[in-house]
Length: 475
Image (tube, rainbow, N blue to C red; front, side):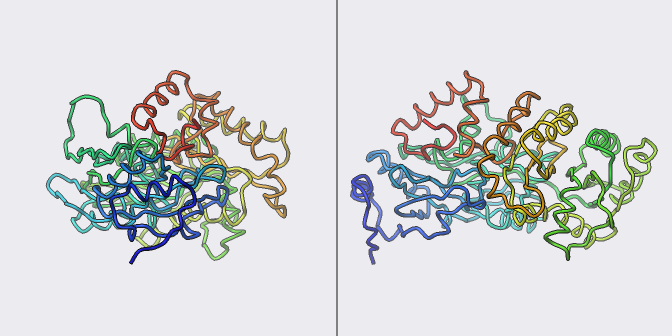
């Protein structure tokens, strides 16, 4: 059976003529393909291609390169910066979905390596590792639907970066298709490989602008034998950072996660998710969620109790709850993991995924509300992965008002936040990428030499400009 997709312009018609694959591998786009989670960047496409292997991806890119057909790689659609959504104003692209490429190609238990295809859902990859009594530590709020290729293309982070690193640090090798259709067979399992330019790290974080990742070799780790979770109240972010140092003095690199939570988060949870139980009747101004993972002797909850006593003596904590069961651990993590849902229900005016040097965080958190107060009255929800310097700094309207009334101020609010981040030596994108939402910001804050090099690399690998045009680099 052949699906008549009614190509909407000469380029798409030429692409179908050039494509050496049955048209049954294409389907008309559905609404879900054209949406992104925040609803800010409506997309367009004339078809969705669903290859089943790297050779089919190669045929698609070869035809696209020959005809100038724009390609938007699609890996789960959970990105938050519009990288998967090409807006109107340009010729509709072809969405390239890796959803049919989700096989585990190999598990090398003795090497602690798993080889998986790019369409593998992150939660399934975690489960496959657990089946070997190993851990794939990357953990994101969207892990039930995001895919490995998208995770690598955005160099995603999550809650365990402090101990295990970002997607980049977890990847040993890639299989990828370059814009001209060449397949790069770089799917190695080596810890050391100094054989020229590192194409792996070039493609990771490129957001589909330099090629399409089709499979990856990923590192696994031993599963901690004892895991402990606690929620401690702290006076301020500076005390939280001192607590992090104290925790590392006690257990070294066994700190799995260290999450900062502001009072506004707890208030939003009470407002939107009242059935979610909180440990305190009145929310603290600041709190940190700490997770330890011990591989040797000792019980993590006992170590957390010792840590709390030491921190209390140093006036770093005021109160705390230490989970005594897996159920209680899950309940504490549910508070942290439900914050994005509460934020969505409230409706942010502007959301910012930023990173700062650890020594600059306290000063930024103190200065930003004062800078924003010059623009109006807002509710600010500051939370995130304090251990690696990544904050989610989101701005909301006053209670009883909708974000739509403030849309005209969104760009100005973001400029104030990003200018301050830049002044403190930080980054305007910690883990979400640049996409289309931050391409102009990258031009504003990016180093000129770096931007020139990026442009040269893009022109060399993708001279026809077919790969996710408008993402990362606007031209």
